[in-house]
Image 1: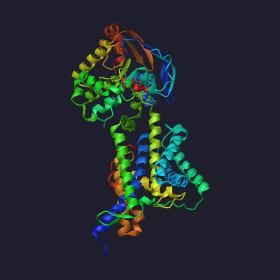
Image 2: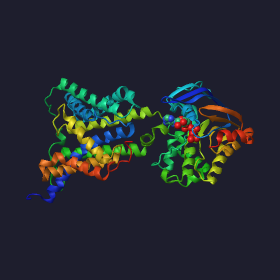
Image 3: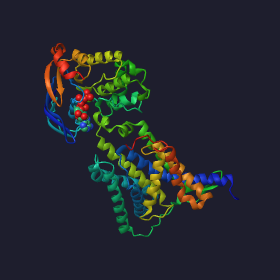
Image 4: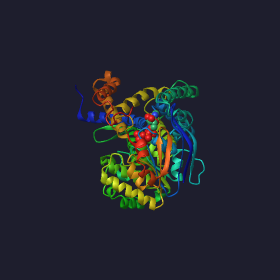
Length: 235
Length: 294
Ligand SMILES: Nc1ncnc2c1ncn2[C@@H]1O[C@H](COP(=O)(O)OP(=O)(O)OP(=O)(O)O)[C@@H](O)[C@H]1O
Ligand SMILES: [Mg+2]
């Protein structure tokens, strides 16, 4: 589904991503973990086309190399992205935020039906559809961000620390949701600080440090390997 | 003070609203363009002036005010489209000063071009026959053309409001003003949105130009004072706020109208006093958001 080869990215003159290669196969959940500042967010942003200076190859689905394509083109290829800081539009209602996830989609004509379906999957949003988004709790806002990104039924979705700063019951709900998304055929690339939870639902994982990938393994193996976890994931 | 009756005051209020209508039309476009593109459009007054001259040209060509009224804003909007696409767009991401300087220069160029084509002297623009004279509005007689101006402004603001609040495109505009990046992530080609918003903003400035033509003299310089007034209104209302542009435009119009009634010497100054007072109390303007200017 996603093949990243020798990816580099820069912010101004600082070389942040220094030659990363990773693959996510169709139907997998793959985690990227690593300590603060390792470059996880920058990796996802580069794959989404949001870092201007970039080099390497990003193969997606049957599209060939999409490295230099625009961000909105990636959405149309079926690549969804939930950024680190949620980025719901605070002054819009929950319903309007969801509609925003559909304005450019082929499903736009079935807006009502899609929002009804989302309301079933996200009971917390259902009763708050007409509420202004910023008046919800952080966890509910995160759920909204995920619902918005999945509304157009992307083939693959990248999530950047979705569980950060969220109360435990919602984290449980969220990870259950990821498993359900996977069952429905969505491929997932997950960046998480919550290492055990992430590895628990992942097929494979990459460990990043200082802009490069330092380790790759099946998630189950990494879960056992406390030494690697301590070396690269403790803060 | 003798001769000041309640009816006279009410009439002056209407005069203020008519004056304010032009401010509203200008500030709405200026504010929309700033809110979305963070471009401070110093050519806005020039687009207004071009609107009046395109009106003169079309009126000469067709002899029909209504055709001119419809097509002048469309042509000015098309000019705005080309300006955004070929001049402003290459400057995005380089800071607010680049487009500011560009539009400033563009304004000068447009004024010079019109001078070459039409000369320095003003050209006449007759009030269309249907809108001449005055009507009794209950408190006294009021010029029909000014009522028409208020009505057109009200309709346009209503249409813009419906567009922004009720359509999917408006949803994109509201979200894009706040967070252009997330709008791109959700599949929208934001540069197209910017193009259209710039065209709408300049087109509405052109509409203000042709609407003002029968009331003010049509001269190449007519955009420069108006630009200052439009900025005052935008600052009072809050940069980037549609409702702010409407409220502040009418407020400034009414304040200017009443000062010219009571203290004619201060009528030019009054809007700046108002601006200073608003800025002291609310630096972001009446409806502006804090920290929008970064
Ligand atoms: N906009 C930016 N401009 C310059 N440098 C940046 C920018 N964003 C991030 N960086 C730098 O790039 C490096 C990688 O940051 P990144 O956000 O990708 O790390 P991360 O792994 O996501 O960290 P965290 O776990 O804290 O989210 C850091 O050293 C950071 O300081
Ligand atoms: Mg991060």
